[in-house]
Length: 210
Image (tube, rainbow, N blue to C red; front, side):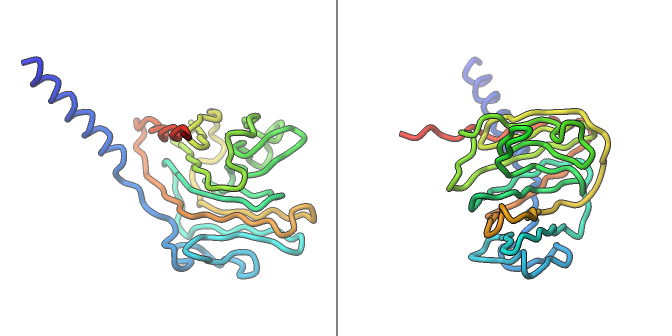
């Protein structure tokens, strides 16, 4: 009986993991801008199966999906050529910021939105969480007014904010002479719709290097 119970528990745990993994939809097909609206060809391109944003003249730009989303989990894999100021928009106005900023001090993974008191709703003060010259895994939970960020398996912060409830997913390359020749490369970006009672599914922590 004990062994049977143990087996059943194992099956339930496997089923829970499988259910959490279901429902992810890619927002980028690795080939073209299908699903994205009017990207500036001087700022955004598809390169080696990746979505790339860059600026060489100090002028920034944004590109957005054609569809809007309200409650979801969003995950993406990115790499940056520094110095840079970029970010992934969600609900049109919130942003997972990708940058190194002095005042107020933060590194990638801060939550920004226009009009935010103090610039960021929460910040990332640990620079070591980001792989500066390699791929990084970011995840966003946005369900109702509850927003949570992770970077490479580490939770960065959470907040309850109901200012923006629905909107598009987007990619930014920020303007400014100090960011000329920056480059943000997105290898994959996926979204999973949520119901009102769905809790966050935190990403696994990265494996320790041997």
